[in-house]
Image (cartoon, rainbow, N blue to C red; front, side, top):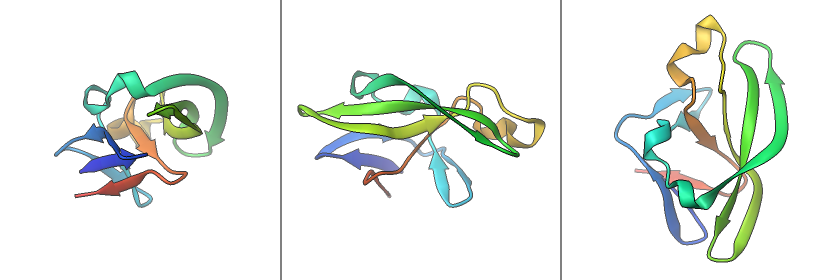
Length: 93
């Protein structure tokens, strides 16, 4: 799977975990140069508290377009630290 935004592949993995229709990429498969930490957090009742990244690609920003769970509930262990995308990021084979 590939995550693409603003013409660049920002993550690529053959080992994503799919939960609720989202592909979660292992943390070592994202291109960290495009990811900037955000202060945003949200809470999922069964996964835990999500943290976000803002994407910066080719001079453009996509605020809070990637999220991950640094700590997870027992049920969400397979996605601990993995990164998922929204806000126009294309995830494709």
